[in-house]
Amino acid sequence: MQPLTLYQLNTLVKEVIEERLPNRYWVQGELSEGRAGYNGHFYGEMIQKDERTASIIAKARVTCWASMYAALSRTFHEATGETLRAGLTVMVEVSVSFHQQYGYSLTITNIDPSYTLGDMARRRQEILRQLEQDGILHDNQQLSLPLLTQRIAVISSATAAGYGDFCNQLLHNEYGFYFHLQLFPAIMQGQHVPETLIAALQQVAAESEQWDAVVIIRGGGSTSDLSDFDSYPLAACIAQMPLPVITGIGHERDETVLDYVAHTHLKTPTAVAAFLIERLAATSTHVDELSQRISRSVIERISREQQRIIKLASVLPLAFQTVRQRQEHLLDTILLRISNAHRERHIREQHRLQLLEQRLRSLDPALMLQRGYSMTIVDGHLLHDASEVFPGQKITTRLAKGTITSIVTSDNT
View (cartoon, rainbow, N blue to C red):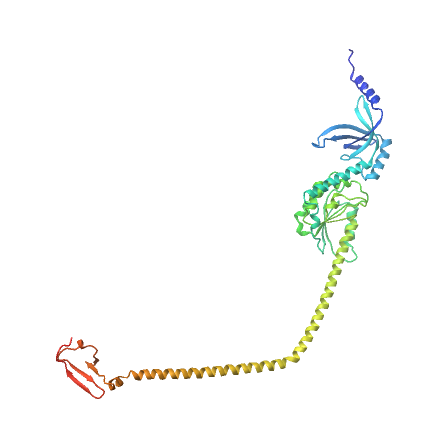
């Protein structure tokens, strides 16, 4: 068999594909690459991933010629707010072609924006479900926004018009309220949005005691690139911030995951500024009302106390007289009790002394002698025992009347 050249073989493949696949086909997949060339053509790559492993199982080069791309990209942007770019899941109508030099490719002839919108919504719902399963979806909403929310950490692009409008509206508010603002810059459009926002949020969290709230704002009125904010790591970071987070990303038609997890979400940066001003104005009004209520209460209390003092002044003399009479009566009663107690004690003591005196008298030796008793004295001492004397010793016996002196003649032991 005569061998074929590579060109001949590729020509056969081209003829077979054009013969067997002459129609246009709707294909869904993810754009892994996508760019518009200087000539107005769109060049990209479409892939399909395994649902379980996320590994790529199919790949094809895609092209959209300038004559078709201008209209399709405009229609797609008007419907989704997005441009054809890497990371989007799309459904496109394609024709299949094979070029001898460039190989297999798909040429885009139409696009279904509703499919991309549905995929974006599906992805957003998946993130919200995961946040709810993790138990952090409403964490930031449980925080209390201070009544005096004046120290604001602002996360935005430094060059964004919305950031400038936000600052001007706060700093020149009609009430003259003071707001302390500090910018923590971040990229607010494109694939680097999540990582730069997370970095700014972490910086604010590290000094959370210095701030009352965090504001995330983005200038511009369209909803393009909203999917950049639909990131689980970014949403989880906001949900777990130690400070209330307020969003004003500048979109009127749709909401991002950030809006669901933030403490308060508003449509635009100026709406956020108006919210902060009106909240502070409401607080100021409430404080004024409380101050007036306190003043009225104090005045009423003073008036009541003055009336009470006047009334007391009229009854105090009589009260003092009554108290004096009661105290004098009490004093007289006490004095009488003391006098009676003293007299009773004096009588008891006299009686006790009389009893003592009677006992002393009953112990008088003279009385004992008168009763017939006698006392024997030896050498000036009262004799108690006969063994204390010896023969020849002189003893004296005392009687009621007179004394007798004797000589001991025998031993009485």
